[in-house]
Image (tube, rainbow, N blue to C red):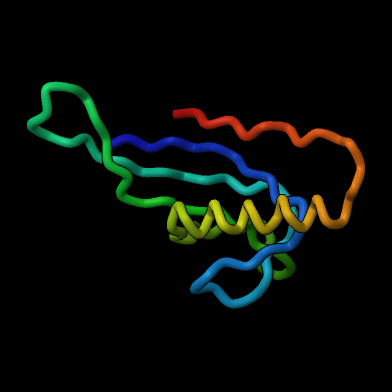
Length: 102
């Protein structure tokens, strides 16, 4: 097994399938777990789980929760966020690229 952590930034509040309520804009840590595929002549991994770290708010401040999320749901949420940002901000400012630490 191996785990990889990265950070994504949402500029707007967003929702995720399977979870009630809206999450605020901000930075979120992504944890990806993968397992080594056995029996191959080269090293290859298969994704087994993706988690989004959600920090508690209000009376739950200081706590965090790992929410299971599919890679496709994460990509859709990020695409919706980018589209909403472009709709709300018609400036020529460039978006910084996301970095993958795998």
